[in-house]
Amino acid sequence: MRYHNITKDDMLNGDGLRVVLWVAGCNHCCKGCQNPITWDPDGGLLFDDKAKQEIFEQLDKKYISGITFSGGDPLHPANRLDVKNLILEIKEKYPDKTIWLYTGDTWENIRQYSIWPNVDVLVDGEFILAQRDVKLLWKGSRNQRVIDVKATLKKMEEQGEDVAPVLHAPDYSNEKDEREARQTMQDMPVTSCLL
Ligand code: SF4
Image (cartoon, rainbow, N blue to C red; front, side, top):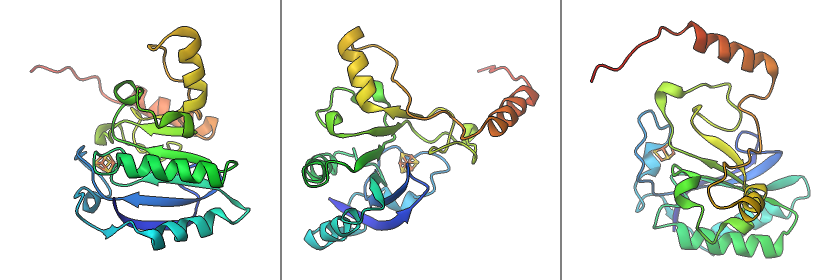
């Protein structure tokens, strides 16, 4: 696996203060992606032991809530196995830290992966420029979902595979932003697709 950055004390990619691993490799090519430099799986730096220790040093700190995997796409075929193994190692070493993961894929396409029992929150779906809203909580566009993975797995066990995922967070952090977003959507002109 290769990566571009490890950011520390990050408040923008999950609950609390987090360490974020920005991996290389993404096939989604979303229009308006903020990190197109991360698309190439051969870009960036090799994720070696030194990089892993850098992450562990952060997770050793009491005030760090956990790690977020972003990119690029941590579930790109070039990353999937290494990310899974790293998550297993972190869960064993730091059972109280939370694991967040961003992917361009949707939960319905990837819910069979064996990685999920060790992931706390998944932010799924491609970034859709037409649905972008900078006030959204933990996500860039309205189609994306901040999914409580453990609660969703439990619901699947009880009710079957096709249940809607349980959300970890609402779209907005407060009612004012939500009201304004609703108003903006109402004010948008109604268009019809003639194709
Ligand atoms: S999934 Fe994320 S990293 Fe990949 S193209 Fe879309 S926005 Fe960019």
